[in-house]
Length: 564
Image 1 (cartoon, rainbow, N blue to C red):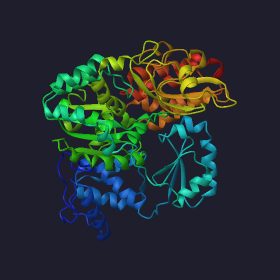
Image 2 (image 1 turned 60 degrees about the vertical axis):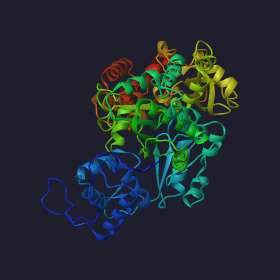
Image 3 (image 1 turned 90 degrees about the horizontal axis):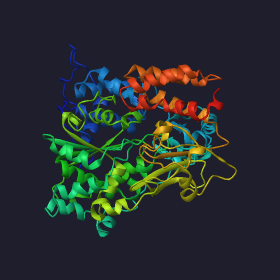
Image 4 (image 1 turned 30 degrees about the vertical axis):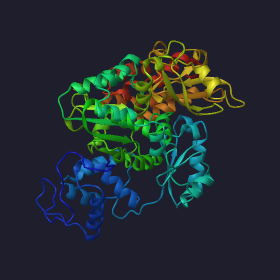
């Protein structure tokens, strides 16, 4: 299985081609010998294709500590892309840093300032690191790093430090970082426990398409990335589209408070991979693309290692391509992810057509989230009755909640669907931290709204919180205490949305900016915020702008005393 193979698209020339020029230019660009050598090494690792532009940029930055402008120009020449096309991608993604011709790269230290880290002292960590490392490194605040249960977190030269302190950050800058882990359940252990038996059955003809899809449909398995679309129905719909078809796995969980996909990929990656390959078989996908957030360097190392073992199965599997995101929350939106996989800015597409009809490279594309795929094997092998036997308070099945904030034992909690917030805290997270009294909770991360402890008896499931202006979403559960300001928490969320807006549509681009200004006022202008929220929810292109108002809408509704 390839983890860096070719995508569809016209090939660019090799770096030694003297005919390299920008389209629309008359003069042949002269590329310095040193840059030619860099490109020659790059294209030995990554094919010279425009669709792999983001992979090319990662390769350069990994080796040069940034993206030197001369190299961006040389890369554009090699790929037959205008400077503007390369530059707009390099500057769209937060994970890239463009260096001017005379700029020497400084080591970069990124301190997460999203909600879980913010209430765990991220601001103090950032200030202390900046003071201690002045002149030695660039220290900056960034959005969620996906380790909310181990807050505060920092990223030092591409490696994430959990429960970070100024001392541990300084040590990491000097190279004192632990080695990247191996999977807890690797290929051999997974096979020994019966793994890939179901995949062999479908390839061998022992189970047909209905035999695979009917258990998913009867059990009512829904997408667990947040949208909750029925999985079996999605697979059947894509299978009916005219080929060729593709599959994309969304492993870009960037919602503040969410880290369950990382947990599953670290612990049992082949359970996810088998679910992925079953989905690819069901729809007849010619290739599979796994889009993994760049901050998960540990997961990336594991997937590279474990995907390389798949040929040992001896099955005619489609190629699997592992692609790195570049630090943008918007790319968790399915159509923005497809744009990024094609080497472009992650701008959400207008719908219809839907990705199931016109998706990656214009082909019908099956898109699934990691946790959804994690459950496929168990559900089909054990049957829908097994799935239905789990659940409380009217819920059905199992859910992985990412629990962080003011609880004693944060982490991923595998619980019955429909569990209440209070049950989740008291029975699975060890209760509140010492000295903290339960005040509020975020049921679904940044986009799920903020609810008071008085509603902690409600089931956490699809649709159960709608009447209160909140959603369970990706099950990113963040707990606030009496020592936290709900007002400050909402402002933190709005700053996140403002930073992560792709800027494509006016309601989101200007709405998040205006909302942040209004939310900084001593007393909130409630009428204006309500009007603004309605406009954003009704007119934004994608879920980011549509959900962003929940941050202030739920505070206005449930905590008016904090903002009046």
